Image (cartoon, rainbow, N blue to C red; front, side, top):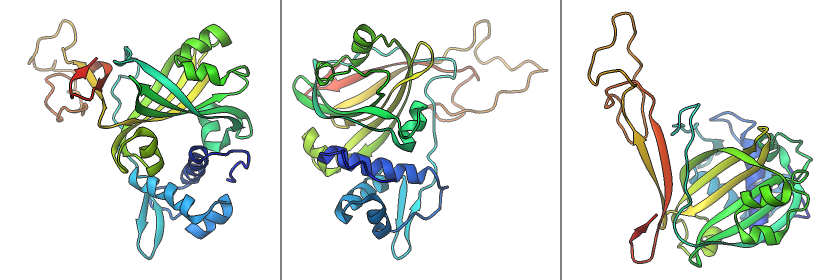
Length: 296
């Protein structure tokens, strides 16, 4: 759980501390205590302000709970709601605006236990680690933290990441063809360092994206988590709520068929659907410009 001494830079250092604490949380259950700040500082080899900043971020994300006089504890598990059915997927057009990238960090580091598990590789295996500031029409929009197995992209350059369109670069320059990705989205707030880079006030609302991308052979290609500005970015989903083909809306179930259990779909109260049919989705990102108009 030690921090790689070769990892330098404010963003990279804070992120490595955060990842180390997350690895620790994965070994514990909700309600379990974690070591004190003094112990963690000694184990990780960092100062108390650096550790406290990472802990504060995890508390805001709802992953840690502080109890005065007692210590820190693993928070209760979050409720997960999948937007797409198990066998379905989004068709996701690109968001509006002219997107560009500015590379903040670019290094080769050990994967560590947490990232290694996601990329199905040894914790000691090397990954290409990069932090990109994504801009729309030259305005900061998102921070991306990328992890790619080094053996898959040994020749990946900083210039390629600056140019953006990473998946196109992987296909044309590195022979890696991505097929699908599993992505989660949840609310969070920007840390002081993230707020400075995104040009927003501290603790501003943000969207946290976490994504694992696999290739045509179902091998992990990249693990990414990204922070998008909550004041300038939102997700719009299109829901198809039609009953299965051949059924009549409002018709009672057949006598020998048990009624489907009541399920909850995002934004739709339980019981508001007239059928137990799965809900299919498509989605697109919408970027709001400075005048408040929506484009996408």
